[in-house]
Image (cartoon, rainbow, N blue to C red):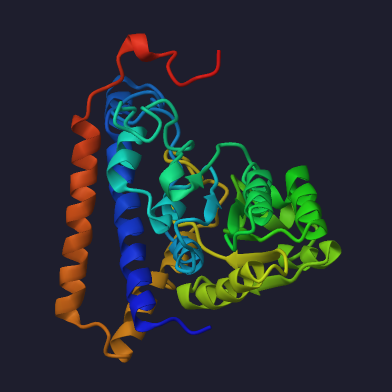
Length: 335
C-alpha cells in the first residue's frame, strides 16, 4: 500500500512536529531541576521546575506513530504508553491542552491532574497510561465495542517490547484472536525496557513471531522507516476493517534519549546514540520527498516555520494557563 503524496508530506511534517515538540520539552523539563541541584551539591530535583515528575520522550521513534496513525480516522481508538506524545500528536490531539496538562494547568486535557503519562482526549479517542502493558486490554475493549455496534472502526494498542513479557500482552492477543476483534497491536521495539536490553529479557528475537501462537499475522518492520511502517500498518488496518481480526506489528525503532529525562544511560554502549542518529528517519523521508520533487528548500523551510509556530504557541499556552484551584482537587475523581 503505497502512500500518496499528500500522506507522505503529512508524515514528514508530523515527524518534524513530534521531534521539535520533544526537543523543546527536553529543555523545558530541566528548568529548575539541574542548575539548583548543581549549585547546592544536591541530586537531580525531579519535583522542581514548571513540569514536575518524570518525563519520557520519544525522539527517534516518530515513524511508528505516523506510519500507523496516517491510516486512522477520528472514530478509531488509540491507546498509548507512558511515552505517549508522538502517538497523541499523530492521532490529532491538540497541542495546547496536551501541553497545558504537562504543566499541571487547569486548561489541560485532564485539568492538570494526569500529567504527561495520563493524557485522555475523548474527542480524538486517544488515551495512555503509565502502567507497562496497560494499553492492550483497553484497545481490545474499544475494538469489541466497535464490533458490537457494527462499525468498521479499529483500535490500536501501542506498547514497548518490554511489555510483551507481561500477562496483559498474552491475554489480550488470545482474546482478540478468539473474538476476531478489529485491533492492531503495535510493538515499539527500541531495544531497551527501561535499562534492560531485549536480549536479556525476551526469549525470542522478534515478538512478531509470537503472533502465530494466537492465530494472527505477525509482521516485522526491521528498520525505523515511516514508509515501511505505513505499508505494513495499512494492510493490517484494512484487514481489521474487513472483520478479519487482529494483527501483531513489531517495528524496530530507535530511542535517542534516555528512558526518562535525567537518565544517566550508563547501560548504553559508548557512541550508540550517535550511531543511531546517522540513520535519522526524518531526513531520510525528506530525501525521498525531494527525489519525487514533492519538497524543496523553500517548502521545507516554510513547513518547519509552521511547525515551530505551533509548538511555540502551545508551550506559551501551557506556561501562562492558570493552575487548578485548590478547592477543585476532588472534582472529576472517584470518591
